[in-house]
Image (cartoon, rainbow, N blue to C red; front, side, top):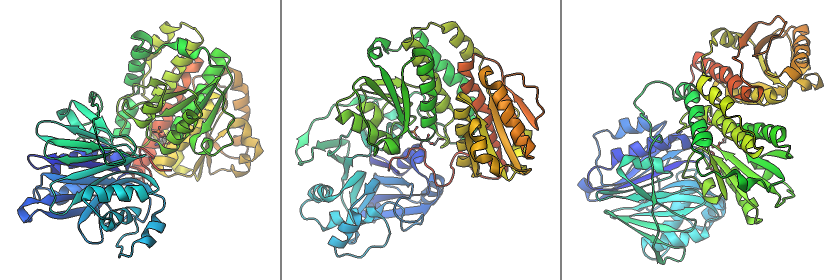
Length: 581
Ligand code: AGP
């Protein structure tokens, strides 16, 4: 789960690749590095690596090095602990080749035993590059032969000592390359290209590319030259100013009203080529995703059942892909993913496609692997989300899926949606709420129906960035186990946005209080009950409330994280895009 970037061109490419790597940090940020050809030192292959983010790497290389041929990497550890030895680029045993790799070599143990050479790291990638060095033929032939032996996924860039070429190979993990009159760049996604490139090529599985000055040649898996069509790239809204010291997470929480407005304008006003007639034939819906996106799927099920009376199901992608699924052509399989690059979601989508069935993808990144598989794409309009914890992408997913359900049901409630898009805001004071959480030993989130889903998402946010061991549960499940944990050191956050379950959640609150637990109530409903704190939500139609009620929970996670001194944008052991299984 890593990002790779390469630059080849006139002028110093080191800062170019560093800038590209900053765009890719969402894919992992525990260590990073560069390999480059040093023309001032006999075209020697040099490597600079460090533990930490790209800023540390930038400090290390600043003004000290210059090169026109550079490959770089930002890592999320899969094989081997976080240390400089395991950071990429990895060198072959003979020191002739450096590689940066995104993916996993599943048969690395077997390959390692087949080549009798010393290894300095614990990575599968070092095995890959040494395997390449062991093969016979030209560098390209060595690479091609090694790729045939590797089981697993890779996008990689390979650099040879004293050479004037970079080689790329792709299987499973994404890889793009773009050319202009001065330089060639390659990377794990199009954000590395900045505004300097108007078009880009997307490598398909099994393809290779050879980069030289201002030129790229593509090859198929047999090593035969191929022509590829380039795709115009729009960078609008997909490039960030990294110099700002503000946290991306807080910025993105506050951007939610804008994301909702953009979604309303694109899906309800300009219609965006999305023809709802295509979906009338489906008798049921199955939503599949991971993490926060899975919570959007749970919400989507409620919308389609409520407005369209269609049977719906939601599955976690890592479960779906290995389940004994009974697939049906009357069902639309919907894959929800902010990044469109989540490995389990992609594998699940491929499984359904291979069965000859239709799939729709709901994604926030226009040029992503998931969209390339989709029969239908429902875009979300959150703009680029940098912070690892998903906030604006989540609410944009819910709003897009709600609009989808309303359109499918033939309900025209544009005025309600318009009113919401104009009046939804994200201003909540969570200072006291934050203190209550910090004073408690145990934190629980509970709700019923749509509020249960918000509870799950609220708990995930607090776990992800503040590292608190908390739990989200359906409030009705309280007395089926969790009540045993409630005592005077417990805080229970109750969400209540539905009249239908008002009395039920009140009973659950009393059950908690009877055992000494404190309650924070988040609600837009009149509850005649004493609690440690009430956070009042503005009133919108009930089906819009999940977009509102999650906001104080996002702000809570952010505040607790800051109070505990953690970085909200880069939580430990997480990556924005989980591109390996
Ligand atoms: C959300 O805060 C997390 N970063 C994580 O749960 C995420 O939603 C999940 O990994 C799915 O990612 P995707 O939406 O890019 O597929």
